[in-house]
Image 1 (tube, rainbow, N blue to C red):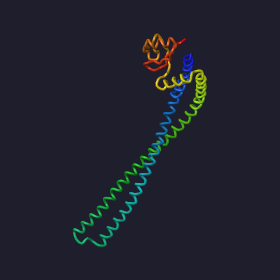
Image 2: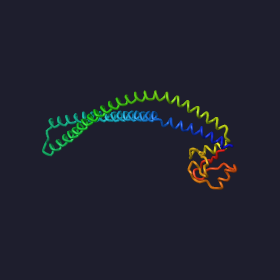
Image 3: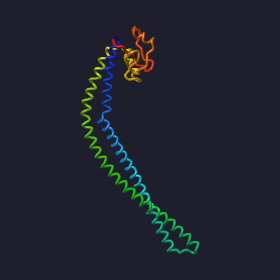
Image 4: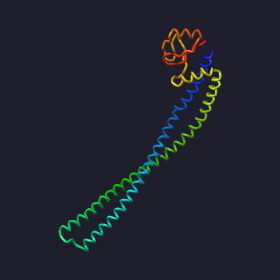
Length: 235
């Protein structure tokens, strides 16, 4: 009976799927992925710090250039006042306000420069810490990956053997029935369930009497109305 061949195929198919799932979910693999993600996060943090430092450096250069220009302006204003003293109180106040405005701007630039220097030093320390941590993480990752690669190589060979057995069993099954099995497998695993005491052993729901009769007479290949699995009766 075709269902017997399909049932046998399912045993090997599920064994291969379970083995592959176990490979993906292995503790060593999960630790390796976690370590890889941490390394990527550290590398991204390094790139962001480098970008921030570059922007900060450009700003410091711009502020420094502007400060030099304003110092020259301040010197010129002072020289002009000395060369041509104010004519009256109003003129003196106007010139003093001009000098004070330049001086205030210079003061703000100096404060900004001090803050940027402090921030740059902090980011430089942070960059060194991340670089040290990334180097250690990379060394640990490489060591763990080398060990995992050996295990993965062995397990991959075992999985390949199981898949080959699955392909061999598939050749004994009707093509249309196999397609039906694979369609069900997309939303329900395993795709087949034994019919035991009038119940689907996959979802434990009772199977309608009419369906039971058709199955016993061998007139149809039935699916569970509840879960959609192909119902199988052992010979």
